[in-house]
Length: 528
Image (cartoon, rainbow, N blue to C red):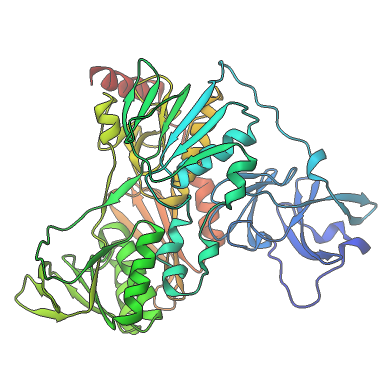
């Protein structure tokens, strides 16, 4: 893979570059007038695209070319080289494309292509499309589904019903840069207000769906209103697990899920100088790092021997602990919180920690109540098939609440990853329209701790071997999680391209489950 470098000598693609300078699957960063452009070769085909991912501005010149697509090295968004379309979340917007000419041994990049005349895939639907779609939940899965419906030229009514008081937001940022004070609030909404009007999406906020009537195909709202649906997507997500702390005069315990939650912690951090974080989860650790950026003293209390050991293993768990300790965080491992007083947190070992406020990150639970009341099959989440359809025809589920059939293992999976939720929303939207596209992506997430980012691809609920390549201490490594001799997941630090290659490799082995295994799962569902 040819990596592009910006050394101040970027080639001017309007003047042409040698075809021989482009390797198959390679990229070259250059300029077309005032635009940074990446020239890409895939086989004998040439493409010219915008240089930056539309998600967080990641460098596509350092991405991975797979067929006629390119994947971003930062958060694994995927774009079409032919049309610029964002094919996989977390990117939701397309990139620009330019026309390319190959003359002799020279390659020239010409004019930017007009979006209106770019070729678009023609949907091939096998079933009658619903006359309306209702989406329950205003998170990443719900927003991604609504946008995909419009991208697929669906003309029926689309409604998002959300219990939140704010439009769908960039939730990963709430514990990372936004909480640390390094991202503005106007960056947080996934879409501006006018998007919903322009795309004819009815966004209903501060409203809960209390029941689903499968026979009448209606949902009932907490206001008593009933809304009809042709197809329904349950994307209610998960809620933080609340600790049983009830002292009336205790310090406020904050939980982080919404923009309002993040703002409340920020307000407290402006006046309070000492925080206790309960739980060494990803959320807890990211909150700790963000509070340290605000010069707040942080103590973390957790029953584990090492942070994230259950998820990442002891090797990376130690790296995470040392990094946080180097930034002034104090760990109280092997401890739980016994109580919260007015000025301190009491520990199970008999000690106490002085504090001005407390943030708890001890896990989440999927919001399955709506599906349970409707009689849907529940299996530690709302059970869906490979097309993300529940046990009730026309009702789909996506995101943290959904437990789907994973073709790589022949088992059901439920993960709480932002990128997975968005991609499930996109696939569910297509399948509501009859596409019958299986959800078989390798799960991916990233976690940011100060200047170190961990990227994780795959699913490793239990492994029998861990292999480390590189130097853990210098934060340049790849950690492979193996089961039965096969790599089932990979965590990397400072090796983004390797993480992308692992994603492709994992997805290339995700269809070996037999037809009999799929039938076995369906037989289990029918018994439920």
